Length: 73
Image 1 (cartoon, helix red, strand yellow):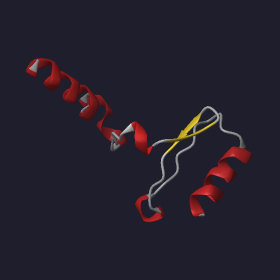
Image 2: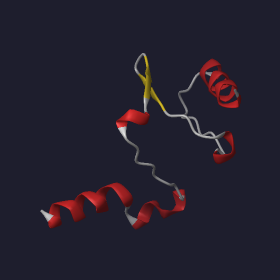
Image 3: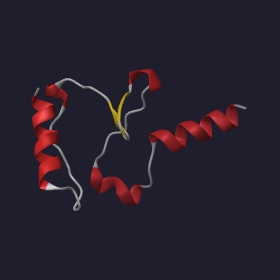
Image 4: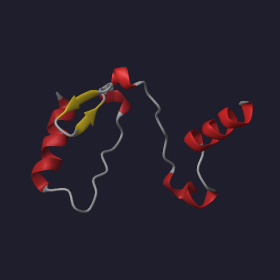
């Protein structure tokens, strides 16, 4: 059982060294802290915690603008 717990912890909180350039941080939260809107899962964080918004290459201009606007509310 302890080996399984250690493995789960390693999978969630680490990543292979070849991805170090990303300098990402991972956040694990309880499902009680998630709001659902249609097919989207949302969490609310203080604005001061956000330093960047990174959008994928296929995001529409409208969705990007809406995301930024919602983040500022």
